[in-house]
Image (cartoon, rainbow, N blue to C red; front, top):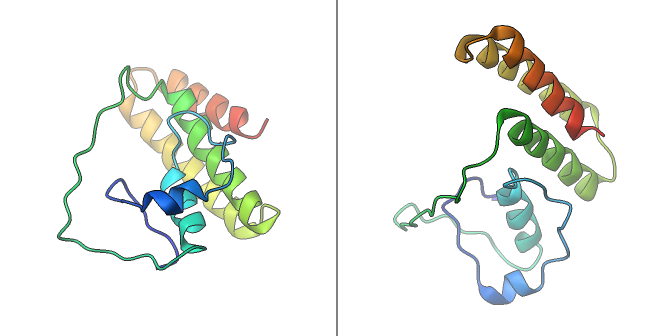
Length: 130
């Protein structure tokens, strides 16, 4: 596999010590799974074993508000694409438009005030591209 996705991952310490600086990951770091697996794959084979079990620790204080989560998710995905390809391509922009539509629909449905939900989504995305 080129990438591993999700929280059920483990890496050899020696592989993690070879990783480049990734201080550009922000927030609770959505996309860190893709970044770590991409970088680790440069040093060895990625293997999936569905029989392994990982205990996930909760983040103290939560993952921030909607704006912060969206800013981190979209921003980290964009920075990963730039890190990997040197630019944002049409496939990424197309995917970001799809994510925006999905997030807007969810905000309208799940928030007490659709206006506040839409505002938070738009500000989150705007923060990601600054």
